[in-house]
Length: 455
Ligand code: FAD
Image (cartoon, rainbow, N blue to C red; front, side):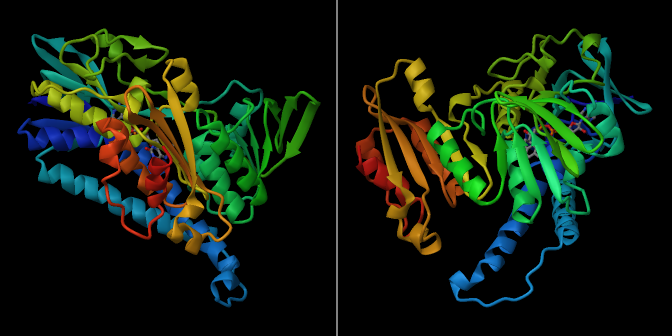
């Protein structure tokens, strides 16, 4: 029996950052993780995908290197070597989380945590053979890939023909052909990686466009670019069934069959609280996700839920922010999560990054918006690196409140530029103040300044 000030179940970005902040604040903290510290993000999500995408980008550069005055012959790609490199990066980061836990005095239990009830003011959690007690509990159990109820999907998963991100990211041999079911961010990043290294990739998407709520003009340019890279898209299409080696889908023109080596399930993720035994203390769930308010409190005083398991905005940086808010809340510091200023990114070539309102959401809110669009080619750095590039920055300006309410970028470095745009949206600074910000020259980020001057 061990007593703590706080027990956290789940060691992904939500859980480990919460543990770090709580430990730093002096709370005796226990962190329970049943698989690997770092969760989905470090082990089978954000980091593995970015590591592989980087390798594929280098390969593409080498394939087209005459453009840069470089001669190279017999350029080839070793996918297995890229996976080994990726695994090394993951191990370094996972070790780093372990070191940080030690530094912050966090007790890590490498086992499944199960809520067993409440004794007086203390929640009780089983951690393998141990029983832990604490007056505060944070649920950070993450999410899992949606397995759509398609005939043949279970058999496909059992045979290895069908995979989730977990299996595909560790596949040693490059598939010759891959079908991605779902054209959201995860499907697109995987599709882009495999297409770049020579796999024939088809994305089947139920909606009329890829990339979810991304700005439609950006989606159109993104799809045109992907098509040039050899990816194929079936939009407004529904997967009907899977055979041993093919995917059968239907669209307005009828039924079609695609033979392929592998299928990726990228039809979304759902909050995963299975195994937590939330019923033991009556934590309220809605469609499988823990219900929370803006302070990350659940319906049970003393219990918070952060990250993907609350189903709000399934991104690692959302989990980070929610972790900070939960710790501040338990320490009595005023804080809340503002979901409207959380950026989203697609790390393919080209990159896409957005923050704030879209034209559609602004319209729905009745905002009086001016939309300006600046081509990235206005930036000398962008042109130097992408002489034929067609990237752009779209900026949404709220005429009434005289501030920037949305920024949408497509093109290189978009992922690195977007936090500056998020600061503009968050601060609601009037444009005459933003105009005074000096951007380093030459940078692709200058495109945001150009857009501001178009207002
Ligand atoms: P997780 O990272 O899922 O961690 C939850 C942890 O809890 C897991 O390790 C699990 O083993 C553990 N756990 C669950 N139940 C128990 C239990 N009962 N006892 C003990 N441990 C338990 N987001 C981004 O922001 N940027 C990206 O580029 C990005 N890329 C992605 C790419 C892919 C392929 C995928 C799948 C996701 C990506 N995401 C990205 C999303 C991101 O990974 C998640 O939003 C993030 O990991 C959520 O963090 P979390 O702490 O809530 O959950």
